[in-house]
Amino acid sequence: MSHLKVLRGNFVKILNYPTKNYTKTKLNRNVSLTTSRCLATQTAPVVECKYLTSPWGEIEVGKETLTDFVFRDIELWEDKPSVTCGASGRGYDYSMMKLMIERCANGLAGALKLKHGERIGLILPNLPEFVVLIHGAMKAGLVVTFANPLYTAEEVRRQFVDCNVKCIATIEMFMPVALEVCKSLKDYKGTIWVGSDVEHDNGYGMTESSPVTLMTPYVYPYNKVGSVGQLIPSTQGKIISLTTGEMLGPHKSGELLLRGPQVSPTELESVIMEQPEVADVAVVGVPHALAGEVPRAFVVLKPKQKLTEKQVYDIVASKLTRYKHLDGGVPDAPRCGFSNAVVQIMRMHAVPYESHDVLANEDIRQGIKDYSNWPTIPQVFINGEFVGGCDIMLQMHQSGELVEELKKVGIKSALLTAEETKKEEVK
Image 1 (cartoon, rainbow, N blue to C red):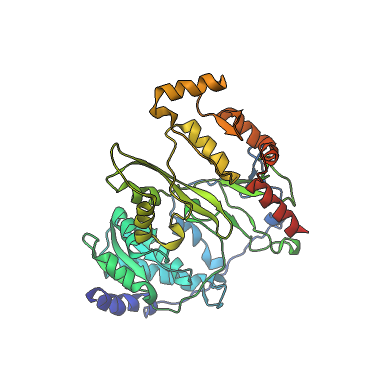
Image 2: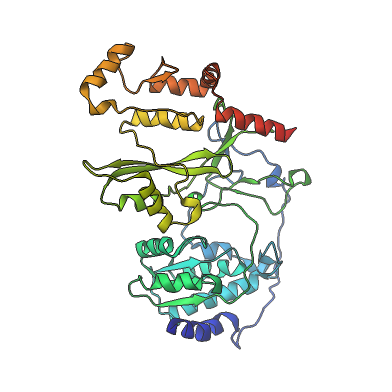
């Protein structure tokens, strides 16, 4: 608790109390305004004919810092809202936000003696002070990493140890996690207790999308109320049919695909790969009636090693938060990339299937080729009848033919069910 004593005293004073020589100066400037069509009604530029792109174009990275860019020329709107909590209405104008950021940066570098390039970890919900800490840390030359507040102490510890975090900022609710994690951090310098009520803002984002994909413009037409907003810069998106994979036009229901500066999470794989019995693993999402999608792990064991599905499930459950548990199961993983592609297709349609490892026995491998008169592996049989290999399955999936083929043997594709449900919702 010695860390908290310092930070609840000196550090909080630095953040919350303006210095005596701080004065607010109102600048008189002539501002030239040019009226133009609202971005929310502009047609998005198209880079590729199969994708929508952001109306704000591509990001051009300059030499100024993000904080300098955001707060450039704020004297023109220093009394305007900078950040506002969507639930409580609590927030700060640009003038106060800039002041708090500067004091945060001074506190991090002064009271905590954090050096340029060192890491600070945030365990925070969405609240206005989140912005203060992020920009304050960057202004002090620090690198910011933030963990989902729902993470267990083990998950946060794994991330913060990997990032070599020197300081943690959190609220009282998550202080037990922070105090547990900091025990494992080398050369740890202090814990910041953010002293405010917990509030929640509205918004959409994912860790994988770094972290935003769509946003609603500050000014937008009334007929756009309720929409998901527009693609952010350097991001592309399209909506495809769940049955045919074709790109859909306006007012059509389907699956949203996004492409941009994203990161691919490998946390589940990392946890499983720590087990000495495991040679390789791949984790993918599978359809789920209630959750929408749950993780499934395909585990390849080392020779002569044993590890049951329950053991793998329990290992993950003991270290990761609930929504990361392997509720999609732990079947054996295909060792062939083409076989894995076929398995992915089967999984998208939620088709139950049986698999046989023909690579383990050369006689079986050659025998199946002779039986089907087909030269490659994998081979797919439906109701005992040979259908084809990876290329044919992919073509059938994209054309919608696979849905019809499954119907013939009494199997209804999950993609067809999902599309019918969306059509009913539209009605």
